[in-house]
Image 1 (tube, rainbow, N blue to C red):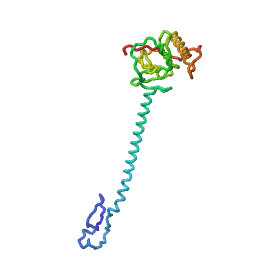
Image 2 (tube, helix red, strand yellow):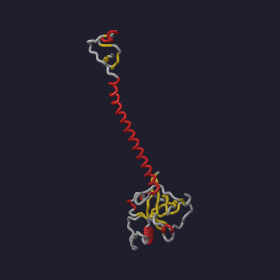
Image 3 (cartoon, rainbow, N blue to C red):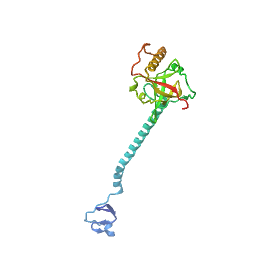
Image 4 (cartoon, one colour):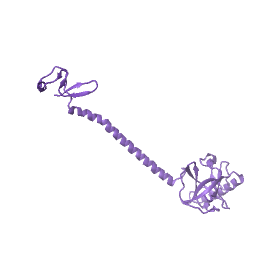
Length: 233
């Protein structure tokens, strides 16, 4: 039989040892000792303890796998959402990223065709990040193009447009490199506002279109930007 002796430092398995000394061959055969010896636990008795210790480890691996799977699913979802956003926006009131489309590099001096487009889209740079929005644009009878920005001081992009601001304009899927300048001259503001009202009257005849009254007055909070083609950019 094997006897187990507890050591303060570690438990040891000792073959044939008891607190009374080493057993002789005869004693090993059947002599009982009076010492406080005890049979050491068998491998069968120790196995359940080892399995119980392994349960937390398996649970930890399972939790890690679930966490990694969830993280991967979220990452793929964000990538997919970002791709859809980049390709479809600006949409409604949601700003967009880069305006994609066929680039028009031939100089444009007459923007009258813009009045036939229901929606204009403009892209400016916010540092290293492109920022694009939907808005109204209108061409004057002599072919000048203006952007409409209601309550401009409260808009995110309007106050960030500096003098000769480089931008990209998209009309009916075609992208034009342009330069923007805010209009502050009262006479030009009134002229651009009149062109805006006239254009919206035309668009209002389409199903679902609603235009302002023909005699609508220009509010002081309305901003406009002059648009010209960016030659050589």
